[in-house]
Amino acid sequence: MASMEAYIEEIKDLWDTRWLTNMGDKHRALEAQLLDYLQVPNITLFANGHLGLESIIEALGLKGEVITTPFTFVSTTHAIVRKGLEPVFCDINAVDYTMDADKIESLITDKTSAILPVHVYGHVCQVEQIETIARKYNLKVIYDAAHAFGVKVKGQGIGAFGDASMFSFHATKVFNTIEGGGVTYKDMSLKKKLNDLKNFGITGPESVACVGGNAKMNEFQAAMGICNLRHIDDEIAKRKSVSKRYYDHLEGVEGIRLAKEQEGVDHNYGYMPVVFDGYKMSRDVVFEALKSHEIIPRKYFYPLISRCDCYRDKHQAEATPVALQIAENVLNLPLYADLGLDDVDRICDIIRG
Ligand SMILES: *Cc1c(COP(=O)(O)O)cnc(C)c1O
Image 1 (cartoon, rainbow, N blue to C red):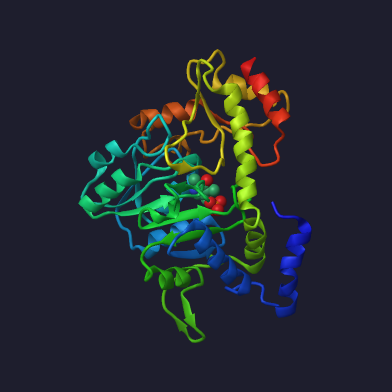
Image 2 (image 1 turned 30 degrees about the vertical axis):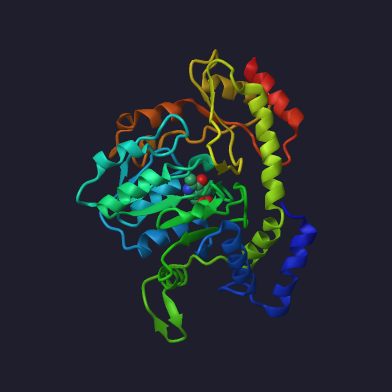
């Protein structure tokens, strides 16, 4: 993260101009820098990633059913439901925990309008197969890329896949604007629609074109992004060395499953998911052991979305058995740029028992 001094320097202008929000200089500058960094043709910034996702669903005019994954943060499913659409859960694969593309076609009905997969933990979805299916059935594809900031596939920015991608810049993510998000997309004509949707549909001093909400990224958020973007490569490099240390300790341990490196992918090391599958301790026992040493890992994602109180009546978790199994056995270990390697050693000692 950028220093406090750098941030204060960056926000000084805001007192000169008194321009605090509504797409000012910082907003425009960050948009330009992110276009470049993410290697995408278009980007629109939002107050947070969730509202970006709701806005792109609306902008694409989706209707009916959306095929998505239950193994994600609730935001993905909530965005579909809050826009009046029906989520249809597709199972995940047991290798990288993204949507199992082989299982998509059997879920398509005449009501399906889109596929909304998640690059979970920054792992790249089966983008080519998903693209082929979407073309065949004329479906839109929106990626929830909240975890995938800076991820590249064969040198290409991950935002280049599908019709659109949503990136989250929440404080807990690899890159942050405190709260914030960005939607990237191919079709330039979406820009106007997204800008209207994030600002009450106001298109001029005396004109309101549509029933938009308020989802603008303000200047303080954008300034934070400008500062943090200067350090992003260093941030990812540090995370990589922390992640490597975990792999040094845990790879090959019987009953412990780690995600494999994806070929041709530059990863962002946002998360350290570990699946306990036949290990001498269950996930919950490992969780308690770490907690007793004041180390708080996260059962991320647990419960599975289809087991959350607001969804369990309408959806069957057993219908996506792989997702259910992973949700019951996964633990995300602490991973951040400044985590000491000796702390990783200590955490792994506890896990190894
Ligand atoms: C963080 C996150 C979101 C929501 O992003 P916000 O910026 O917090 O609104 C959506 N989907 C996933 C998978 C996330 O991790």
